[in-house]
Length: 623
Image (cartoon, rainbow, N blue to C red; front, top):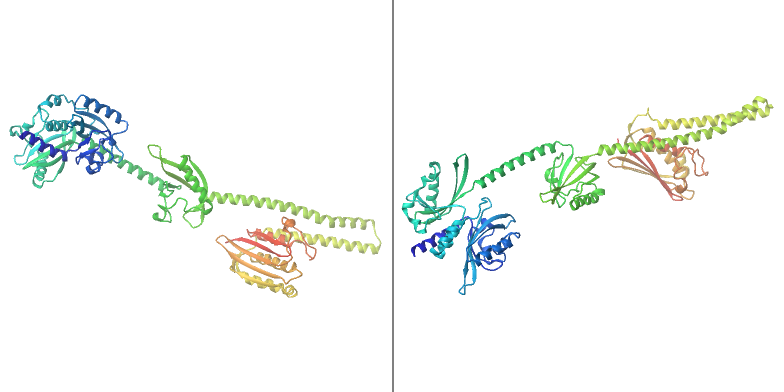
């Protein structure tokens, strides 16, 4: 009877402190838990109260691939009325796999039908031990009480060493399956702790045991021992089991320590590789960006102006020009969806407020299962390339334009020279054969007129060529309103006769450029606005200037007769082109204006409606 009470006392101490889970459950498919020891948390991640009467049950912990085998083994053992022993896998609360060994006994009801199962489940993931041979257990099964039999099955299943320590005598009893529980308190079987542990270990080991005996709390003591050439690590969990008595469960944790060391080494190696990659990345001229599934920046290799907190966590397309945000976002989402690499060129804001061009390659970052975790963007600044391309396109456009002008120039020269030269040749022939005095005077007058026409043409062509080559002109700082006042003074008579009104809106007044060209351009446009006034209204002329980061703009607007751009748009700035005979002129003024504007590196455009008026818009580069 005393042995039975003793067994129950020892059993209760083991239940709550051993590194595994003792349980009682219903004998049904889900195996609803009625009792679970504290070891359930370390084993499964669930606290005892989370398992008891919960829908999960022990059956819910078994790995899906092992459920059929477990059910088959359980039925076989119960049919033979044997204790159930099985190794299988479970899934913990956080989804990890563990290999476990379960030892269980059937508890029948009054009618002999099995109602419950009682047993013990222990983690053997690191042990990899084969199943314990239970032949000795079976041979003794009929000789011990039900409680002792269950306890012995549990203890045999534990891959640990169990000892009872007498803190007063500093001796201990080492449990082994071949001893009965009556030997548990046999002092003759007790041996000094020093017989099992070397001096440098048994003293702190005993000190921990005495702390448990004195304070009553559980203590975990770790130590290491040399076994041959190998160093082994152990963990002793100690709990108070009586007056000056402590129960200890000793587990070999060498594989755990080795795994931890390997993990630390791997972590250190990973950190070293990350530092190495970071050093390479931060010295790279290519911008390296990692983007998460929410399309937010989680890493960037270099920042020149902005602070990390301004960039990390921001949307990947936040710094993209508005015109490219949608297409950039679509490319990122497509890469996440298909895993295919993407490439595009976008305009965005880099280290400076000015927009910059980037050539971006997008690739997926996958985990071990092949799932896309994030994206890596390699962004190369190609602003200088785009600028060169733009300059090349502008140069080609300019060359094409100059070629067309040259062809037009060639045509105009040959056409305008043909008539006066033909006249001179004809007159020379007449003079050669001889004419009366009166006819000779008339012929000589025609000869002078033809020569003057050639001279005027040569002067015009000389002016045009001079405008195209402003090499000797120097840029200087001047005020536009000073230039305009000079122009209005020169045109004072025309302004008075036409009653013209000139309004100024000069947001930009000071300018650094070729003063004579700006003066000539404005003089032509203002004089034309007066010359081609509408006959039914007073000329209203407005001159406006403004600028942005890149350009300065000059606009001259009038309410004159207007121009039919549908007919004359492509001839408007041509050489010797005129579109009305109501006013005298050569058709040279607008050609000169355009030539001067382009010589300054700018361009000129026109908007006009017949009977409404005209606006000339000039754009010049800021210097």
